[in-house]
Length: 379
Image (cartoon, rainbow, N blue to C red):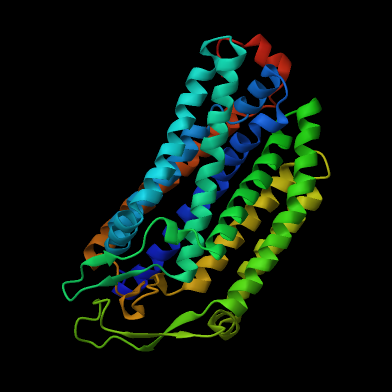
């Protein structure tokens, strides 16, 4: 039904949609966890904050599992390079995520201030560390990772964990944390009332401008300070899916040329900046549903900007550009992509409908009175 090139593009779009779904849903989860010790001053206030995501955080985290599984099935060389070369960083993300289920489930088991405060900081770690590391990953995807392929197409990563912590990647990590704090504060404002609602509104007012300025600075940095690889010799008809069957060179200010050569791609950064700016303005009003939608649009635009900017590259090699993995030479077989496509077409809508149903059934404002009334059933 689909030729090989078409199904490759379809899967690039599918994985992009999954990444956006993860960023939007886990984004406010992470943000609320990171804001918990600061916007909740009493135990009851913190329980209110926790229960804004109490019934949905586990389902939201499935998007991360789905993203990893999709990359494994569709882009095996990308999965192998990332999960072997960035092993230490991946483990650090997992260790941070371990704090989340333990924090949610054990916090309210004992009515002891020291016990609960410790788990509040554990939830802070589980909310703040992953977005920082994901932001560092995005920064290194833009810069390129130090890996190369041998003639048998085995991937060799030559960097270290600390080499990932370069200035640009760390700045992207800060942006990752800022967008989760901003998105999480908007969601918290939407789901709460009273003093927590007011504090969340103040947090949105502070994080919004800082996030927008940071994005502008990152854009300027990428456009004028980072070379973009370009494929100068395309793969021949013999073994076209061989990643080494191409020539890649770095081009100064190539990112700007790439977007200007495809003007339709400019819609992504416009959505990113426009959506986040609109969310900041809408968040000053009540209710906050419009602000949350605008924030979600901004996050979608931000990820689309990264995806469009990298296209057709999936992983850029900073040490041997010819080993860079692209959409055209790092995918599974045609049969695998088609089979996975039909599985996704059938089951992804079911997952989305179920998710929508859960949010509809469980939706209501979380208040101190509700938490005290249902003290034994809520977190």
